[in-house]
Amino acid sequence: WLPGDGGAATGQAWAFQAALGGVVASFVQHVLAPDVAFDALDWSSKVLIPVVVLRDHMAYDPLQPGSDTSIDVDRLRSEVKRLALPGQSVELVMGLQSLHEHERIAIAVARATRSDTVHESRRGRFVARAKRLIDSQALFRELTDSGDYLSAGLIAASPALTHEAFPDFIDETGKQLDGGAPGLRRSLGSVAGTRVLPVFVLSLHDDRAAAVGSGGEEDEVLMDGVLPVAADKRAVVVVQRFADRVAVPFFAAGKTASISMLDPTASILAGIAAALGGIVPPYSRYSQLHGRTVTDYLWAHGYSPFGPFSNTSGYSELVIDKVLYNSIVSRLDAALERVTSAILAIDAFADKFLFDALGEGLESARPLGWLDRLRAKEVEQHGAAPLTYQTVKLLHDEVLKLEDLFSRGSESLYVLNREKAHELSGEIFTKASAFHAHALRTLAGAEQALECCGVEHRVIPRWRPTYLAQVALVGLIAACVVALAVFLNPPQRAPKRVRPIVR
Image 1 (cartoon, helix red, strand yellow):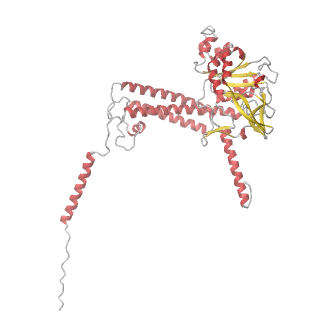
Image 2 (cartoon, rainbow, N blue to C red):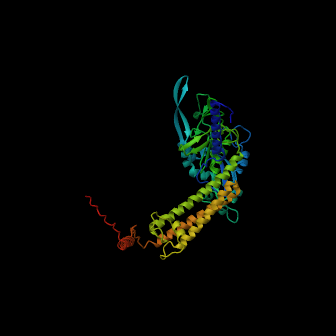
Image 3 (cartoon, rainbow, N blue to C red):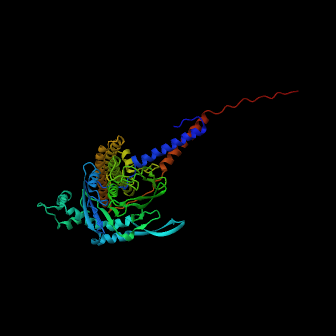
């Protein structure tokens, strides 16, 4: 609050309060309660993260420590383990491959490379030039099958890790089934409880790809032309180049911002946090009012591996807490979606086959759902139906139990007891999935029982003849009563007045 006794001072105080309120609201939306990157996260008890470095050169080894182009492997292992949820284990393996030895991946990178025309001002004139970029979504589609092949090779190279993550594919003697690594490759997409998140580091050293921008920075190939990292639920892709100053489409202090692509450690951490924990950059959020993603780069600085203005290769405590929060919210949302889908399926079945399964709602002006009918009637009076009263009652009891669990989970989040909320969210998701499957099986059995029958619909009139007869009878009685009263109490006439004779 700014003190003042004039109108100008009061206006300044209001402007200051408005600006302060906007900063606080932005802080809550971007930092304290940001969005979740993906609608459904993975909650496997074990997570394997194979980091595959694919290089097209022999100039340097990114896994060899001690140079500017080295990946900090120890830092990666320690930071990634902090992302583990309660009761979850996260393991990271490293591997170096030659890009030329994997034709499918090299072809995928070539197919995902795009060219964009940009116009720059040079000496007072606009000059058009081509700028190369990598389409992340196209690259993810191309790497779907190849990623499993390379990841399986890295995992199979560690017998202890293979035995821990895939115990179903190890026989009693400790040997791998299905012929070793090939059998393991076929199992990556079907093993329950273990998630494999491949991270591809494309270490490129093509001198012909680099060009010099208008500000003197090197113009390198970036993911979607923005940053050297792109993350998806399926994989993470990071680009490494031998360039210390690479121009990015951001501005700082009136100049084009630049980043270093020598050390991809921060980019790898940012991609893993986005793919594994659903973390979004702190400067980005989705606005329902605008219907698009909006940014506020006030929160792009600080202890964070995200964005071009970050200054560290590590996770803050806010990021670690947000990973647990995202898991809770994602589980509750998935459970609510399953319960809603089951209730809608039951309602659709009741409207189609059981118009009046419980004998209520026929005379009402508004249609009643099966839950309303269940509350209004405790016993069935119209005989057995394919979806019997007992079945509906059991489903209704399960819905009430889930409602109680949802309330307890919400209370745990409200009091910031995230460990308890995480435990409840797992129980809620499990029971919601079981309820969804049970409801669908019950409906399928009822529909199968109705295959030999036909459904007949009749129009129920709102005005019945008996009701009209009652109205007419009441009117007739009222008319008779009025007539009798008039007959028994006739109106009395006033005596005639004699007109005087005046002479």
